[in-house]
Image: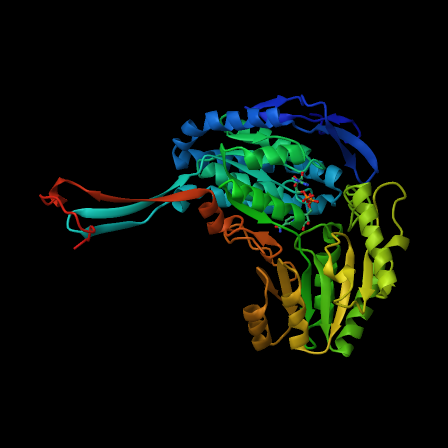
Length: 504
Ligand code: NAD
């Protein structure tokens, strides 16, 4: 794969059994460089039979890998981390060139992924079970966490490094073999990560990458050899993945879309809140599941101050190519997504929201899928631009008169991923954290993404399933508990007992 010349047209592949494998289905997806607006490569879209080859490879690799000591598996992760650090710039460029986020942001997302690798390096400790000595004379009970087998991850376009790295480091370190089906929009980074893992000493077949669309996903959801599915993407697909995989008896976690609110109380430092909103709403062109897309300002005075502070900043956002060090915000991922985001700006105007800054009119390079930062004021909860996920650099300000009205908005919203409150009042903050209906809460922190050793997951339509990504929940997701009750000769009392076994 040529990673040095971003202008070269890349012919992408699957990664099965430790080897690059050309697509056989004859179906391909286009990969773009969103900063230039041109096609940069094509990715094969796997047919069912190709996915089955990846599953067979993972199944073959499972017994030996599961039998490898956790310490040896952890050492592969250490080496992988070292290799990713050595190839940091190259990987970040792959992300920036196919996703469109600016290089510094791509590096940050890789860093967040590597933190999960660091967490997975502690797998010998994380897999330790419990032990109860002498639960009855001569009898002990202990538990162990064992891998599930072949597991699969299906990931979205917006974090081609970080989201796969939420999944496979823990799954693999725990002794599973893994099939990754990354987004067909930016597959080069996940393919490169798989190559680096092989270089780090991972046996062939332990991580396979299969590129594809619904056909590949459906094969993973329906094949009985796949024990668990981790999905991250939009809510309609998350619902479908959850329902299908669960009906097939698989363990499944399915993270969906979001509409994250940030409440700004009258006592908040408006400049601080406005700075935080700029990064949270417009960073990565709003293509983050933890992006803040709704600011709820409490009282008219706070709302007026917030708009006054935000408007010039949004107008002056530096929009440009992802590789330009001056750019604060890059393009959207595809022309199709650009059209969707633009149509939401049109819709907001039709719905009667106050368009304070119009991203359609901003200054940005003429080629590429660019749109400027957009700011709407006086958005109502009944409007579609409030209810639906836009996934672009569009911030809606909703004016609330008091705390109760403000907290009701995220609580009544369909989504419940992240939420934040900006205030100087500890009681208000505590009350908010206790009562708000979302999975991740920030107090004077606009993007409350938990670090790798905590767990990531939303509520309501932002998440289907029981266990979150990474941290202790990640270890639980990729392992099953076995509890052993053991009695040796000295604990055996003679004679049959036909009653319920009781320990004395
Ligand atoms: P998407 O749902 O279109 O695609 C996600 C994955 O599902 C891709 O691998 C894709 O190939 C596959 N897919 C798409 N349509 C499918 C179908 N009909 N059947 C089976 N598989 C299908 O999502 P996206 O546009 O790539 O990513 C953006 C979305 O992901 C946003 O909604 C964002 O909020 C969400 N997201 C959520 C989280 C989270 O943790 N909650 C994190 C990142 C992104």
